[in-house]
Image (cartoon, rainbow, N blue to C red):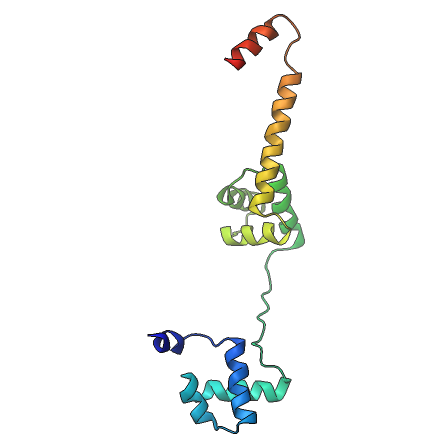
Length: 156
């Protein structure tokens, strides 16, 4: 069962390192290593070739070119600063309405997360906004006798 699970998965860096060790230091040929690690021989060959070319056994880091400018990203962040309780769908709709450009919910999440706005941070900001609203409301209550009636009503 474990072999079936491992057979069609990407190898970890540790597995690649062990395969290279077996090839270079123990002198085992590629066919045996491929059979041992349940990988195609072409996979083992590409590991060896990459190690010989770059002296590194890590995978290539995929570089994704984002289609959103800094203006777009800052708009999303400022939207969440103004509306900390907004859902991702709401931010997506607001972005698409404002810029007339498609954005996925996942991209909205990646943008706000890259600026350090985790759900915990947004939750704290929302609580702070609510506390500020309550404080502002309580200070704006009329200072007349009606205030005591309102206060007694609120405490009941």
